Structure formats: structure tokens, C-alpha cells
Image (tube, rainbow, N blue to C red):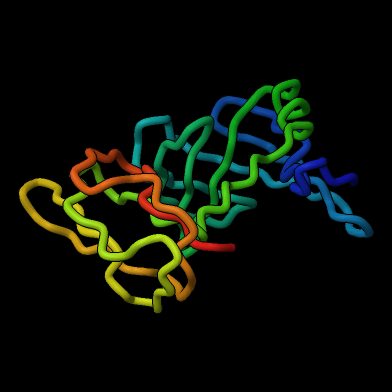
Length: 174
């Protein structure tokens, strides 16, 4: 079995349905055979508990709907499943996963509010935990502190400015 460009191997190759019984054919990994599971249930979307029989063994799952599928919880483990047509699954395997943007050198505004004051200036060296700025939100003042030690490279904001969530307050040198 080949891995997809995203590095995620498909979890199953097919599902056959007959009334309330499903046969799930799972792909094997390299060197191991594929397996078939016989699954029976009377669960329907919208129900939070799924009473299921898998190859004769009874299991109960908590079910929560998520985008394009469901999250299943059983005995402390959580598994997300995506349900899609065969063609959509083939296309999804070709999609590159978007890397999250690196914001480790930025102080971002955690909530909408007013920048009351900046407690540092460009070029200052700061220590982890040092107060950097004060935001007023919902008539409360919140002190924003440094998550790491470093030097302030740029401050694109000014005291008195209204900020939204994730607006850049200041930048650290890399």
C-alpha cells in the first residue's frame, strides 16, 4: 500500500452495507494482510451513543459530529473519521496539508480590545514572563507577558489603538 502525499495512509479500502450490517475491509500495512470487520448497529446520525457489535463483540461509542465525519470515543481513546465518496477520498489524498504559520516571534492580541500601553520599545531585551503590553477588553485590563526571552525587533502598533484577535502587537528578533 502506498502512502498518500500527505503522509497519511488511507484507513480503509471499502465498506459494504446490507440493512444495519456493514463489512469494513481495512487495508493492511506493508507486509501484513488486509482484514474484514463485520459491524452491526442501529445508530443513526444525531444520536450521541452508538451501540455496536464488531465481529460478535459488543462495544459502545460516544459519537460527536465534526466537519465531514464523526469523532468516536471509546474507553479513553478518541478517533476522528471522515466520510466521503471514493472519488473525493482519492482527491483528498492528493491534497497537501497546509503548514500552520510560525508565530513564535510575535506577540499577538488574544482578544479584541484597546491597546492601553506598551511597556517596552524597539531594541529592548526582555526576559520570559516580563510584562510587554496592556490590553483593555470588557472593562478589564490584561497584561500580556513575554513567552520567551529575546529582543524586540519591531512594534507596528501604538498605544490607544483598537486591536482584533491575532493582530500583531510586537515582533521579536528571530
